[in-house]
Image (cartoon, rainbow, N blue to C red; front, side):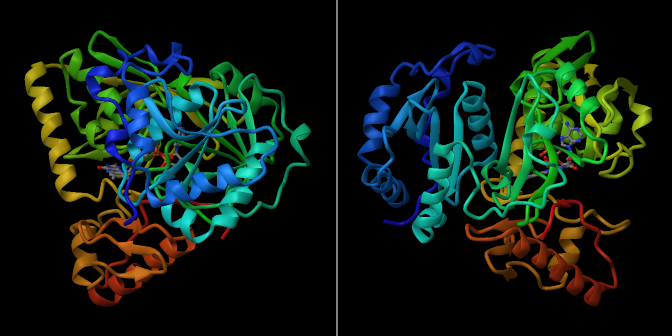
Length: 449
Ligand SMILES: Cc1cc2nc3c(=O)[nH]c(=O)nc-3n(C[C@H](O)[C@H](O)[C@H](O)COP(=O)(O)OP(=O)(O)OC[C@H]3O[C@@H](n4cnc5c(N)ncnc54)[C@H](O)[C@@H]3O)c2cc1C
């Protein structure tokens, strides 16, 4: 049977989704119809799902029992160990990474831990996958492809107390868009801004701190990332309207912010519809499209500084330039206030639909990618330079220059971060040789090779 992507049918029809804001009160309660749908899915499992299922049924796991195609709220997860609240998902090559990020965020908000494995990984490296599942059941979770990082910290006791959660050795490959990369030495999810502030204030200043959104513009190298990685949970994703402005938590996705503005008939934020990252990542990157960027709409943002101070800074303090802000490393954006202008809801909605359709037609949205790889050099389009240098479809290991959009690199299913970065460097070399132009990486690259 050919490897298939996550089946869209694994979700319930949108009309059955709970109204916005209701998610957080659902506790592992199947939606209407989910039980029938789960039964149907059990009968049509993919090859990778069958392989995983035979492992989960056949190997000794003590008292742990897994169920397959288990309904949780509005989703049906591939495998669930109810007693340990461990969810295991098999991802196909052609699935929506953005939708998976939302799905994972929902499940984590309900207290589930989610392990994702690519179909190719399950079929080719079942032993490594099995070791990873065993480790997760023991309470630690080194991803099979994730190396431990050299630690500047001396064990968890070196970390200040936190009301949120701390995870050692969490794999970036489980949630970032490329689905590659090593482990975070410590992945910290603060409960709220005050929790984050007291944590950072008490953390040894020598420890590096890295904020991550959903990794839609990020390569984490295979050796992992030392220090503390901050991932803001769903409690930082609230969006509200205040007059002509939209106040958003930094973990809210661009599409959520744009949709809230549309519903309030506020124009000017439509471009966020096409940016599949968080509001915090968008501020840090000065994300933009169609001639507008965050610098045009940011009134102010609240930042928890590396030393634990909470400050609300005007947009002008961010030193924005093309896909860049001067936000110091280790500072975390926790909230942003964006300005819109009163507009016509139907016109705003039509513009957002146009953006969505245009993106779908021109970008590899259903692949494991990292957005625009290189910044557009002054007077040039990066994609055109890459194309002219003959790099369309070029491969290094499991990484490939997208055939659909040559400024996108994709993980075809088996790439490592080293493959992706080496491919990017090869493209830079060829473009320089062909056109004399030196491309600059837009994708952020962090961690140890
Ligand atoms: C298919 C696709 C299309 C894209 N199209 C566009 C586009 O049109 N225009 C565009 O500008 N970008 C685009 N991108 C890139 C990306 O979506 C944006 O850069 C986005 O703003 C990154 O958000 P993120 O949450 O994924 O950040 P990440 O990728 O997780 O992180 C990116 C950087 O932001 C920092 N960061 C993340 N969260 C915070 C925070 N809360 N506080 C401080 N720093 C933080 C990280 O440390 C890192 O340096 C695209 C990406 C993809 C995959």
